[in-house]
Image: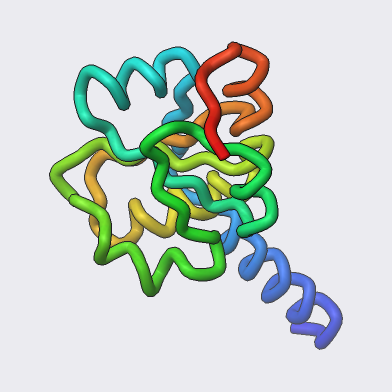
Length: 126
């Protein structure tokens, strides 16, 4: 295989591993995420950076930046539904896929992230 083609294949493979390229990831809207949080005790995991978190986050959310999720997922209960969020829903997809790959059985991606949460006028705290 030509060297340039091999490099391209490896790069695309790395992107798929990071952003996910396996089975479809289940998304959930902001209102349903809040309902799952309140009624079923789902854990909302916010993978944004600290400065984003400090700007406002969902009540009872657990802050684990995406770059730290592999080392801190032991803090999460595998028996609970995990809903992963970020600003817009892109980083959270990567975080959700990492949790699924690590054996968490029920992981959802918050579609639209905290932008959708704010647009739905759901509670925020600083």
